[in-house]
Amino acid sequence: MIHEVDDALRALLREEALRGTAVEIALDAPTKDWAARRNAPTVNMYLYDIREDMRRRQRGLIAEYDAEGMVSARHMPPRYIKMSYLITAWTQRPEDEHRLLSSLLTTLLRYDSLPVRLLGGSLAEIGLPVPLTAVLPPPEDRAFADVWTALGGELKPSLDVVISAPVDSGRRYPAGPPVEGGVTLDMGGNGNGERVAMARQHRTREQG
Image (cartoon, rainbow, N blue to C red; front, side):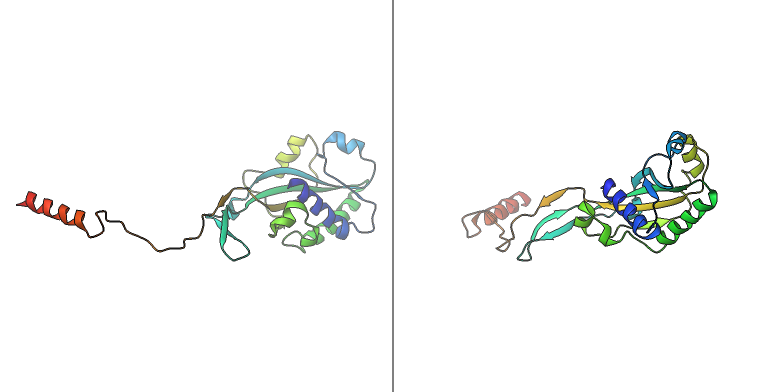
């Protein structure tokens, strides 16, 4: 699933923000060593955080139906995994980097989710939207400066893009056969209530 989100996001940036340019797109960690080896204009979309999107967690089971409209199985709702990307532009001049970031930002703000036409694999099969947000404030437990410190690089203008991808947990439960008859209550005895009558007589004697 992670590589499918990578491919969809990269295709979106390539088709719209970077159309007609020779700018490369990289997924590498933007460390000092990587920056030193770079020799062409590049957009880096570094995946730096993966965690469950708890706001989208659902409870209960979802029914699956066969061709006759009968429930054939039930499965757990999909879990949404939140993937955070640090997107940066790398050129020889800060002015060019800012133009690239502007084009990237304009593209990302057009979408509330990844375009369906760009989804493949399990994302296409599950048939649910893949929400996308850009440049929102980071959560309190995570700061961009900490990310750059961990990478060992210098702080650089960046776009924070978060994509919540639905994932099928694979937990399915087959449904039992449909009920064809009504409920039958067996009171015991020989069919004429003999045991019930005997139990009542026994209780009456004890009370007397």
